[in-house]
Length: 140
Image 1 (cartoon, rainbow, N blue to C red):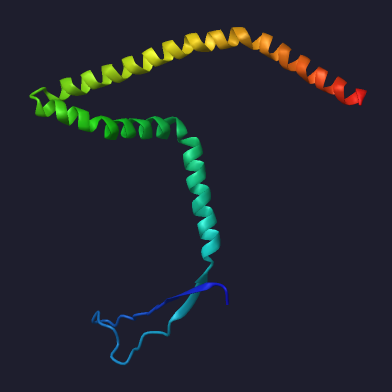
Image 2 (cartoon, rainbow, N blue to C red):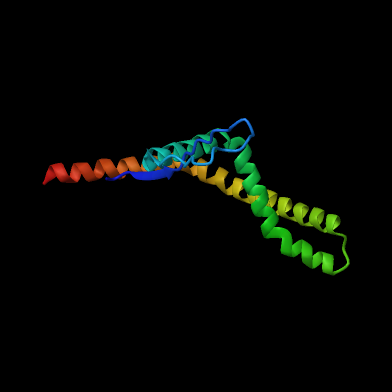
């Protein structure tokens, strides 16, 4: 009883030589067609997963572009209200965003280099502290 049933009415119409159905004909009784919704849901989920997996090269940049468009639209609208053409305002906003991202990457890149230079010394200190900790436990 765990499956859903869909009732479909099938009627067979016989045409006479005049093109109309016979006078006393009645439609045939309804036929019960059952389907299982769980396999359909599984197939739908798998289809969505495969579409997202193989379409990620297109979908990720598209979603990011839509997100940026939605995020930066108020700024472009504000510039348009100040009598700056919409295209020029969008270009100015995109150049500002690209400059901000570039500046942040440059700054973080220098800090990342400094961190990578200090990493071997920090790893050596960590190894020494672990070895000293093991030595203390065996002495007890």
